[in-house]
Amino acid sequence: MRTFFHWALALLVLPVAAAERKFDFSEVREGQVPPGFRSTVTGQGKPGDWRVIWDEVPPLLPALTPGARSAARKAVLAQLAQDPTDEHFPLLIYEEETMGDFELTTRFKTVKGAVEQMAGIAFRIQNETNYYVVRASSRGNNLRFYKVLNGERGPLVGPELPVPSGVWHELTIECKGNSIRCRLNGQELITATDRVNPFASGKIGFWTKSDAVSYFADTRLVYTPHEPPAQALVRAAVKKFPRLLGLQVYVRGEEPRTTRLVASQNPAEVGRAGGKVEWDVVHQGSPYCGKERTSVSAVLPLRDRNGEPIAAVRVILKPSPGETEQHIYARALPVIRELQKRVTALNDLQ
Image 1 (cartoon, rainbow, N blue to C red):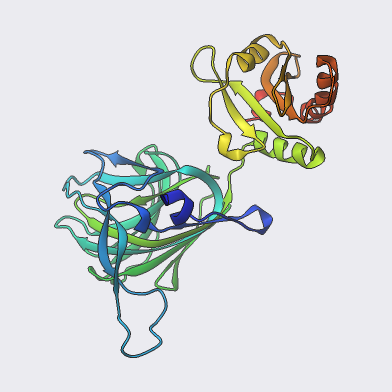
Image 2: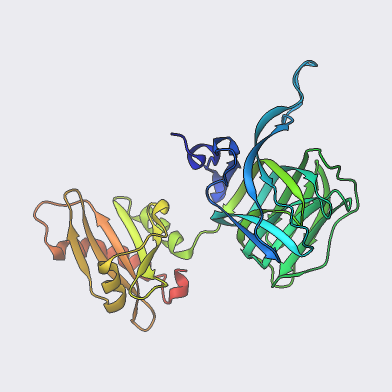
């Protein structure tokens, strides 16, 4: 069965470590929240009612023939709750990725709302009370950018202009460093720079206000992934030691006597829990050696500048006939030393 992530969120590795995701909701069952997203709210009231519905959407490219259809039914993301509370901002946050610089393009349509008719994109989201947002208002006839800091709205930046309700519009947000540029329907209307404690990276999300019912479609995101330092170290080590079958870095978890994987030769594994072996290595600095049918592994500590273990590194290797534990450790040690050269504290990994 096709899944939303395998098909609708196409991930393309591009030069200079850029990536692209296209959010196509056609693989999501009607009435469901897309996987990988979390519904929450800034301010008062309950989270919004986000779900996939079907609507008439014009094509992205102009019709080639006069008789071509001007719109087609397709799956779109909708926020359908109509809570009239003033300080009520439903958010649907994409939890699967944290990013630095990016360019996002989406189409939106404000549908109805007695108090507000707004649609927007929140970005570099730290949490529900700290992020940037660009939003368009059909009732207020304006486009605005501002920063939400500890739940408080910063100065508004952006022009007055008509944003007709019931019409699909295209919004583009480009974020490089602390500079933000916004285009509406192809026209650049906002340039802003946050010079006071800017958010350097974060998540992105769809945003509305109060009782606004709004739809979103054709969202495309080109971005620089926010790579944890440990993952960058693993990537460099794998490049230097290409015969490795696997390389994983574990640190202490949030719960007592647990560890979690913060970097791996296979990035899809990041986030999973470690076992007793990883805990013993992180807690006591005790090395471990294991043999499987098709591989051998050594789990060794990374230490801080005071010699205290702060992480466990599992080095997975091809087996050699008749090799001893000492031989396995000797093969793994150059990898550990390469990582240790760049690690003096836990902050070097996280």
